[in-house]
Image (cartoon, rainbow, N blue to C red; front, side):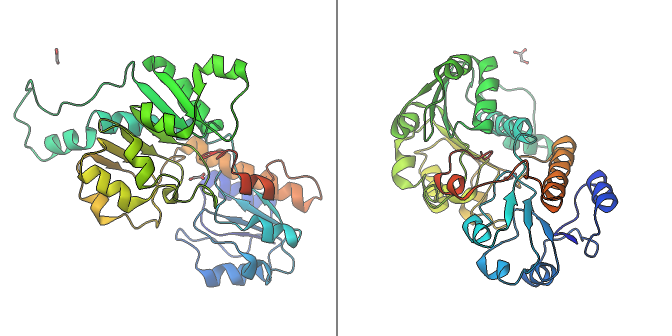
Length: 330
Ligand code: GLV
Ligand code: GLV
């Protein structure tokens, strides 16, 4: 019996129904804690989203559960150590959303530096009075320095796109990349403080772990230059949002492009009040292509575990603790 916590794209739902006996019919709303407990009582496999908290308490009430397949690359919603203690395999969906998420990161970089939301609102509200020499001046990205924190799959895909903008690329990661890969990407490994101090645009591509929670706080934001921008398509809780709001209000930071928040769907009201922030509703992987491939990957992982095979995208406790890459948010 396979439980799916929320309706997935149609081709994925069709394939799920063809391959497995599903528990109920998933609705297009977040599962409640009670829904998850009811499912855990009978499920052999659970396909869950990043908003479903999967913890020790739930696993204790899941006698048949063999696999939790997360429909996301980030799996900070799952207590992987607690699952491992009960022999439950946890899987995620790396690779298939890398390019989509890197694209969205670039959409945010360009939107915030060129002030697209303000510009679009001006036109939509009928307030545009025609071309003007000093209207809505933004900042060039071409030739500037990009600082990438977390050089996993998504970080690297963001770096590849930066080549078209002839950017100087600095990065920080738990470990430097192999030197040939560094050369291909044109990226230089430096300490975190140097990324923050030297970059015109700082972009986060690390997973949320105990060690990355609040990693970009007041002190780190203060290192970014006043003309600098912060982009976050990883996880909201990596950034101290009140400190970010304050930096933006005081203009010690020029702008921010955010796709993720610490308490989704709640967005800090101070952030919502600021014109120099682009706010997106966690759509990094939201393309038809990526979301269907993610679903097929969830299916492959469930099928492997139920057939007694190794899951292709199993995640480990060590990796969750080290936070080496945010598969995406690698
Ligand atoms: C989305 O945030 C994901 O982790 O896939
Ligand atoms: C602007 O549209 C220009 O032609 O410079």
